[in-house]
Length: 289
Image (cartoon, rainbow, N blue to C red; front, top):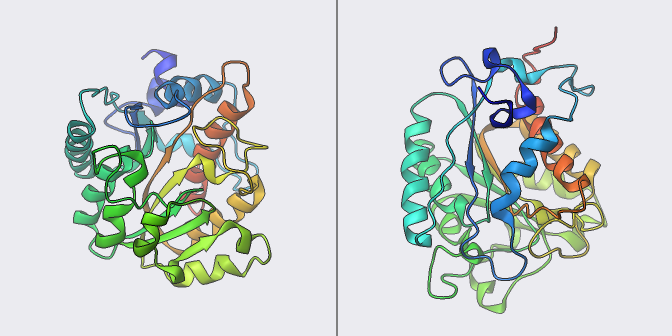
């Protein structure tokens, strides 16, 4: 197997489709983004950065790659947001039947709509934890309900949606916001009590949809709409560790990574964050040498 097609350059014994416990499905779609383009290039930058990352995680004392990380063939659909939705939905349903722990890399946030629909059919008590600068609750945008600005509208009606890190929205989205489950970045900055309060609202099964613009652009400028006032690296990790340890996380996606050609640090951050999330998921099942 070509090392460019494996996470971290891991060998075939840890990256094959049959024996791997983890599956990564890339969806490098950038068809509805409206300002900063480039999220369709995020997957390759992510892979290249991962090859330069240490695969031993100090915090969890583990090497989670030994559980096996299989990269499924990318979804390269480009014809329309509607066809992209159908393709992602069907592929996710197929992968859910495999029993692997499913992860996804965008692409823009619209790719999450089909993923979440497939997960909610399997987990009737599903909580969707959205980490994001934007609410993404428009009913439709630019003529389509499958636009990136609508990424969480359906989830707000069909799942237990909890929104964290929010600091931007359109007035048309206000009727769809549940104030008790929407944690604004400005309030989060004043007290860490939001972590426990948000955890108390979650059901047992949690799917995490992490738009990378939840991070402050001072550490992560490589996204289409870099809103000021976002989370820091350790704030995000502290929270994710609590979620993974306290709930059953059934899958996650990372979206809206638009690489900056002359800036490598964001590429590395995405690879590191992906691996950290896997390390937290399997932290109680150490895979050390």
